[in-house]
Length: 232
Image 1 (tube, one colour):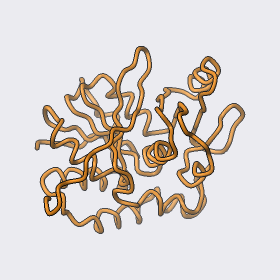
Image 2 (cartoon, rainbow, N blue to C red; image 1 turned 60 degrees about the horizontal axis):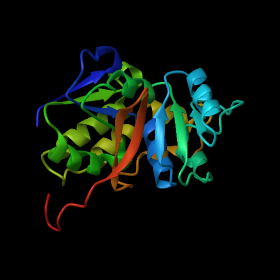
Image 3 (cartoon, rainbow, N blue to C red; image 1 turned 30 degrees about the vertical axis):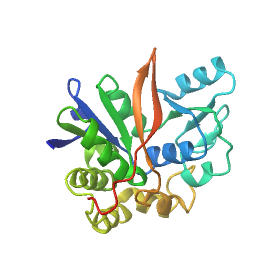
Image 4 (tube, rainbow, N blue to C red; image 1 turned 90 degrees about the vertical axis):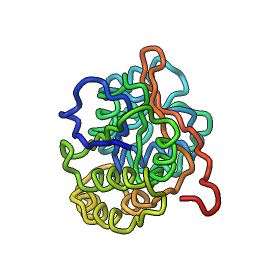
């Protein structure tokens, strides 16, 4: 399957199929939110918009990058999210890179948001649902973040072979600048367990599909069947 990799500034036009990658940590955190029962995640363009959406929709929760802040219920950390009861809830998410990348391609016919925790399901879903070349949007560091590029390349390889060895790609992510910053505590609103949680390959059995719903861009989980026994 044809594919290419771009940073957010390089997104032009409307890709037919877009896979938006943010490993550390937006789309790892989003996957954990769905595993904790969240029904949907609304992607906000600014923190002000996130708070306005929460205010106008009783029961919604808001999440952001960085330290805790008034009005926000959670931070962009998979480990710190674990204590929240999200069953049936709507979460509004605003992050520095991941949500920006997803909104940049929100008009594409097929948009998936991904990280290592949903890499395999993402590749299998693309095999059966992609209707054209795949544009991987590498959100970190204007397309140069090695953890995101490694994940994108890993998913791309799995489009053809589901038995690709994950270790070299995970190693690149583990030794990336983002991982170093998290490990050194240079990113506020983080937890020491975030790195390990971001590097768990195929932790969850779903993809995260983003679609326009009225004026909103909404992320929802879509379960992907396991491959047949013995199949690649």
